[in-house]
Amino acid sequence: MSPKRVIGIGLAAVVVLGGGGYTAFRAVENANAPKTAEPLSLPEMGALAGGDFSAAADPKTDALKEAAVQAYRADKLKDARSGAKTGFDWVEVKKKAPGGNGFPPANFPPGSTPSPGSNKAIARSMLASAGFGADQWGCLERLWQKESGWNERAMNRYSGAYGIPQSLPGSKMASAGPNWQTDAATQIKWGLGYIKGRYGTPCGAWGHSQSTGWY
Image (cartoon, rainbow, N blue to C red; front, top):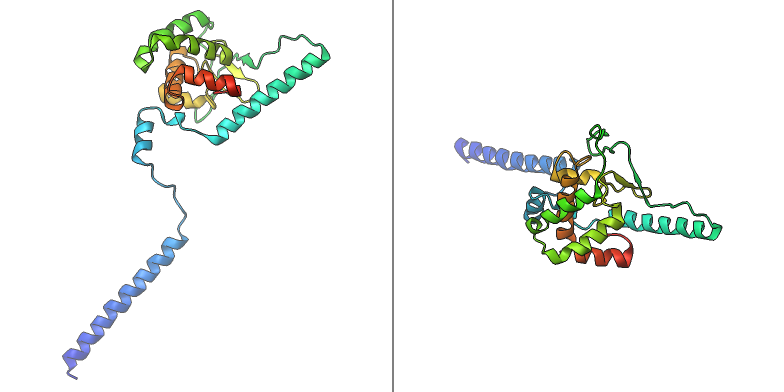
């Protein structure tokens, strides 16, 4: 065998063995690397960009809503059996807006007070732009009257859901605007998007609420 051929075989062995060694090294390295979250699908990316990602079904959040309804019903039954008449409601009006998801608690604008009538007028004016007909107004009015009394400062005593549409957590409404803690229009905008994405229409959401106690 000529010296040139010996050198050639040796170089080939280095390349093959070296490449195989590198491949094995990378395989071990990848196996030991921390796992990262799967990238969002195209539909999920589109929903997130449109502010509707929070409308996706969330079993954990749904379970919290169901537990809150059951706890409220248990307290109501207990009050009825004791003969108490406390006027107990499942929401409380906050004196300071809650924080969450990087948002600190916020003070409400000085001198401002909730106005259910004005909030209803805002919601009614936004129905068409949200893709709903006027026939959906009655369902929406009843739904959010039950949920929050149309009060942008309402918080559920049991679940912590917040705002006119009772977002859980309230910080989900940040997708509609950074002033979600105090602004009724921002809360309504998010709520209409949530209803459209999750139930199709306010009447669909109202029907679900009537059968389960939450939406």
